[in-house]
Length: 428
Image (cartoon, rainbow, N blue to C red; front, side, top):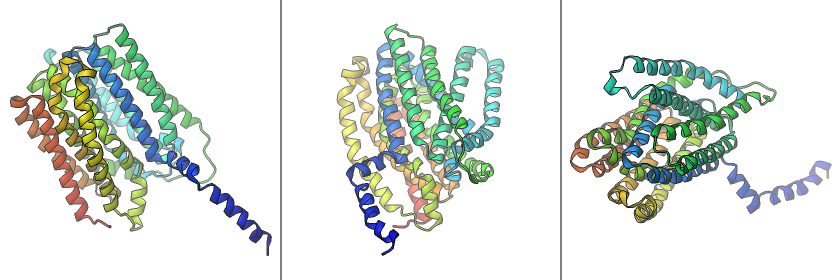
């Protein structure tokens, strides 16, 4: 027997010991989707506390103003990213962190510069009745740039396999945001702009720190991935209508309510909608973390979509009723009696969140198949249907009309995506 043969049983015994329950749990905790879910769970928990602080500190009208500013930021962010958030993950799977930062920076220079120029132009030329002032426009612009950088680092972390770093940054951001908002609550701050400043500072510091860390980390020897920015940009532009339509589908209700109802209605609606959105976060994290692997599996002819969709649907069927019941019972004790009328939107918003969660996975599978145009068509369909619902239902029904507009819009997006996924091939 050779020396190598004699060592095999010992090696096998060590491998067996390493595949026990503790090792399995450790391996699961290192999975990208688990870490992304943990980051979103943390963000969701902080968002829950922040929402309580705001509704306790601000009148519904002021809470609505903060919500409106945040929606403008989130929508503007998508215009600067130009759809590259998911195409970067699919195109640069396995890239090194420093190279990823440099590659994404090249993608963002022109869009960010154009966004800042447009904001400056709006401040100069917009009529007074539509111009909120230099302070508000400046805060929105700066926070938009911070959000762009934050979403870019998320894509970089997934592509480079450094989601643990991203999780640490999000922990720091969550703790910093919570601390700043607690201070604002304690000193009884009722100025909406100061609450936005807290979001800006909390997002900026951890994101900037990790960009510096990634750039200074020495790269291992050997060839890196080739420059794929042209491919990422092309796929990103194909997904850009999807990104804008998705953001519009998610945020138009917040923009339509002040126009068609009131900022007080928006405050009531946002208090519930902010909570129900958490239902879809873990599913979206899972879909985003799997884009690169799904694309590789599709290219190898081994992408099985049906088990994935069945598991996600089961999650929503189990979690949604529990979430609806808890939120309905906790609205008044947690938010206060002024928000009692928000109970009416709990069930439709929870149902809408469940449909939205499943649609994220279906659209992720389509991206993995290189069907960006189908993804955009599905998102546009959802936006158009939801917008029609908002316009027709909010005037007579208020926040309940906005909730049902979301429900039919998200459902239309999911239906289109399921049909497109079936047409493009579904391997069981």
